Image (cartoon, rainbow, N blue to C red; front, top):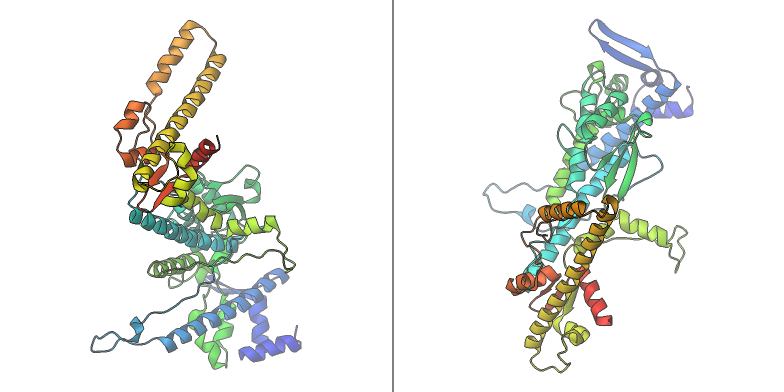
Length: 471
């Protein structure tokens, strides 16, 4: 309608009201025989106005960023000497929060994709700090398997088979649609361990991704259109007809719709552009010395001394703190200085509490505790195996033939247990095998390490030692 608001918008854009109205109520279809103008219904017109607003805002943002970058950029001196562009800088990155709502769409996937990428960097940063401490202390650590979320990132951004790649294919072809996208998604991503599409989700074109913060269900409605994010040709022509000089400067930042509704070769999809920017950001962070600050909101009412436990736990999970703790717990999360370890656990070695010959006492104490923990673990493993064997015998009967067959089967299948899939350290089953190992490996098998200034304990070893201490 021609009213005060529409006339004001037309004036600000430097166009006539008639051209503004035509661009929002009609769509130009590009056909081989020629162009056809088609009238839009009220819903389509509303979408067209949204697209125009979003496009102008996005183009302005990109333009401002470009101008700022140009104003602060310093050219390399012609004589080849290093200039001020090589000076140090401090950057502040406001990381997106992990999002999971009742209805999650394309925007939430992009935000959670960002969180997965930055979380991987954070995990590697924590792992690097752990590695540096282990190497300073001179302990055995390379057998430790740290958690990694690379499989989630592959599910989202891997070429040809990732979610974004499947979506881009539907944006390139003329007949692409949300229905075809979701069918291709189920086919290509279905086998992935982190992807889930239940029979209840498929009729509603939904799927779930198992992120580091938990399972998130996504709705695929309007994903193809959102990934194109193109301004209709009629709106592009409107901006081109503007008398306002600034609008002309925004033309290069507008993603225009081309023939058949497809994007031009020069433009990239939102997902592809987002992924590229994210990789550049990650590469830049990799060359810095990051410091992380996690902010937690205790309650929604902004009241002092009031903590909502559920809300705090959710924020810890969504900000990646719990995932970082998991990385730390995969190694040696508990560590004591030598003196503190001696005063806490001296009674396990019956060494007395005097301070004489502390280094020798410490070595003997750790040896004794390592063997103690290994023996307790072996007994628990043997008891667990006996229970499993007993349960299998109860299911199959107690006949002599079945018992003998079961015993043979057990012998054939029995293999040396390793500390983990990546380790070549086998867990000894007899005292003789244990004593043959060198000191560092014996400690690793028991879950502890004697460093230069500290004693390092894995979670299971700490629990076992504490139970021995209390017992």
